[in-house]
Structures are given as C-alpha cells and as structure tokens.
Length: 401
Image (cartoon, rainbow, N blue to C red; front, top):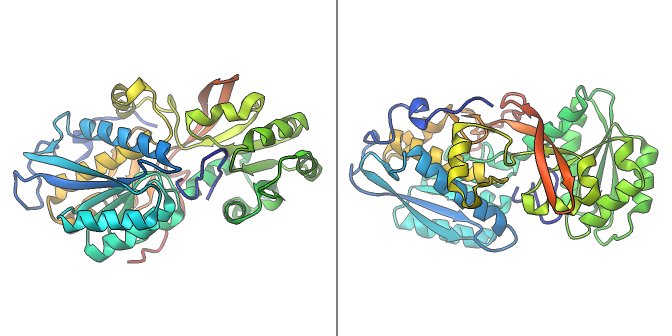
C-alpha cells in the first residue's frame, strides 16, 4: 500500500533492549515441545520464497535473516528440545502458481509449517491453502494488508502497508486540514498508492489530491510545476521503474524538494544511489535499515548475516524463525496449539518489541522516520524518529476464516 521506486513494490512484495527468546517464551527452546508428537522426530518447515525473479534480492535477505533468527532462537542448536528444525527451501520466483504448487508438495510430505512469501500476490494464494489444510503459514516480506486477518492459520513476520503509510503521516503530525499530494504513475500501482494515502492520511483529516504521470514519461518538469503550484504540506512519492533517478533529479532541480516535505519509502541499500543529490533532501519512511535498532537480536543478526550489514528484510526472516520456534516449542505437532501460542505473543526481535495481535494476527512493531546523508554511491541512513508498535498499528481487521 505504499511506495516503490526503482525495483521496489511495497504493495506486492512489499525499541527496547532485547532479551533472549527464552526469557519471552514459556520455557527454553531446549525444553521438549509440549504439543505432542515424536519427541525426537525432526520438525519439517517449508520456506517458499523468491530465490529468483524480480524480488530475489528481497528473498535473499529473508533467508539470511531466517537462518540468523533460527540460530538465535535455538541458542545455536537448531533444535527445540531434541527435535531438529528441518528446513526445506522452495523457489516460487514470485509466481503464485509456483508457490501454491510448492506449498501443496511440502504439505503432502508432512510439513505443518510454511513460511516465506516475498510477494503479496504469492501470500494471498498460499494463505487459503494453509487454511484448507490446517497448517501454519507465516508470510514474509509481502506487505499487502489483506494477509492480516486472512484466516486463523495465517500470520506475518513483516510489516504491512498500513504501517508504511502511517509512518508517512507522522511527518506532518496532526493531519487535520493539511494538504497532501500523491505523485505516482498511472496504472494499478499508482491507483493503489493514492487510495492508501486517502484512506490513512485523508482519513485523519488531510485533503489528498494527486499528480499522475504516464508510466512512459521521461520528462518530469511539467509534473514538478503542477506539484509546486499545489503547495502541499506533504508530497508522497510512489514510483516504480528505471526512470526514478531522472524523476528525483527533476524534482530537486525544480525546487520541489526545497519547498515542501517530500516522503517516500527507503528501499534496500543497493537502491540508495538512485536518489543521487536528492537523497539528503528527502524524508523517508522505513521498515528497517542497518543501525535503526541496537537490540540483542539485531546484534545477533549482524553477527550472522553475510557481510555483517543488516538490510530491509533481514528482520522479517529473523522474526519468522522466532515464530517457528515459539510455535513448535508450545505446540509440538499440533497446529491448533501453534496458533494459540502465537496469538497475543510479545517478543523482542531485530526491530525491538514485536506483538502478534490476537484478533487478526497483525504484527505490531516499530517503524522509522529516516534520513540519508552522503552522496554518489555512498549513503548512510539514520533514524530521525521511531514509532512504537502501538503508534503504527493498523485498524483491527475482521478474521475471515
């Protein structure tokens, strides 16, 4: 429901001191799981995510985070009690049909926990499969709000789009009477972003309008002029594709960035050079970036991920592993007990305090206002403000099944 620039699609993908999981769960991961089943048999977990395709870079961060989180949650053993967490990975390439096929294959082999879903389109197809087969499904970076409340067996380990847009709203404080302009491309992606801003920021009292550009546009001066003439209190930019660099350069050159608060989403580190000289003049809503938190989980993740630098979706994989361990520890092989164990559970993740809302399985979590400093290909992100899980919480969704 939020912003994309360069390759990113938030819609389709996409702090307190932490303590060890043992302190937040009922017992240690080394205790025997209480939900029944063979006390020595491996626990089968299927990870269906984007190893290839347009969201492969997001999937790579997810799996790195998952491995780090599993190490953290099991204190390096990879086990819950005497039971090894046996992980099978499957590539959906961002294709819902491939994801459904992989999920069904894993379920047919006795897997009772499925996690992953880099893409929102994938998550929305796998969630019903989980309900039909009564298996636990923990969606990953997929940001669509529709995952929340999809059914009793579906959870999420990442943020949802509402939390992105609420973070954007936080830049203008009380939205009542404020003028907000959405700058986006024509098409479904732009429509969805405009609708999201109208629902979240407009719903808080702002007057929301839009300036839309054809997806084929390469000259952005006319659109910059329209934006300046509107004199918004907040410009919300949602952009996709290779023209992002030229778009930002034009907004900067035409004085738009100097005339109002301009907000967009902070993508993975590899995308930051796209902003060029405009980077330090933009206000960013952020799910996560390296240095946004200093929790014990964040430190553990940094010590395990290749290169030692955390990125946007490492926390999603890490939290998924924590949730898997919690589910097995409390539920054993009983999926109904796994669901009960996760509902209402509060734990310390990479980002800080996380809570799974029992009513609809929304994952309440910190979100960030961020700024970039630097130039060229070298940028550093710093947090300007953190929103608590309660401050960024979406409205409660009705559980559908």
